[in-house]
Each structure stands twice: as structure tokens, then as C-alpha cells.
Length: 161
Image (cartoon, rainbow, N blue to C red):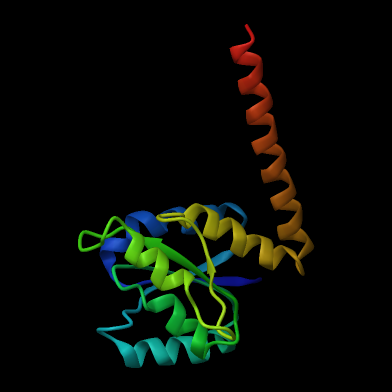
């Protein structure tokens, strides 16, 4: 079974990151959740990023607010795909500092970046990455996408009444 690592800089990020955890569990993907601060626990960050693939993790979702160095630092150390979730925190400049810190990575150190507080999409993207090589997950993604389509069709029917 594939596993996704969901990490964040502090417990205050959990309400946002919970959406990624929920959607991944909905696809029956194992999730490992941890607090890994780029600035307060750099040794833990280095250990986590360098060894996540050894623990069976296939994708890392990293959420961070403010200066938001966690996703980029993890990507610089890990061979795994990293999805960054900019989190609008209390010390943030409307979230733009987080978005730009994650989005503006130098060549050679990619971080797939979702919208501000976009943990739901991060979870779906992680599932799609895993689904590229796991047909069981791919089938669940196809069902999920069909469900999205049906919601739109039903919504359209409701407004035409």
C-alpha cells in the first residue's frame, strides 16, 4: 500500500491540512502525519526528508505559513514529489508570503504548489500521483471525478426548475 506523508510547521496548520488527510483516507491511502518545523526543528526536517522514501512514503504534502520554508527545504533533500500547501497564518501577509515562498522555487528543486489553504487539492494531487502506478487508487479517482461531474449536472437541473 502506498503512503503519503503529510507534514506541517505547527499544530496551528492542522485545521487546513486535515482536508488533505481526509481525502487521502477516502481513497484508502495510508497517511503519516507529523509536525516538522523548518525553523524550530531543522534536524528533524533533514531526517524526515532524507528518509521518507525508505519508510515507504511515495509523496510528501508539506503545509506551512508565513515564510513557509518547509516544502522547499523538504524538496531540496528528498527524492520524492513534494506538494506545498501555503497556509494563511496569523503572522501572514494575507497569505502571499506563504504562496510566494513555496511557489518561487529555483530550477532543479520543484515543489508542486496548490492554492492558499488548498490542502484538499494537495490530497487529490497526491492520490493522482500514486494512481499513475496503482490501478486501485486510479479507479477510486475515476469514481471521485465522476461524482464531481454528477454534482454539477444535478446542480444545473436544480436551477432550471
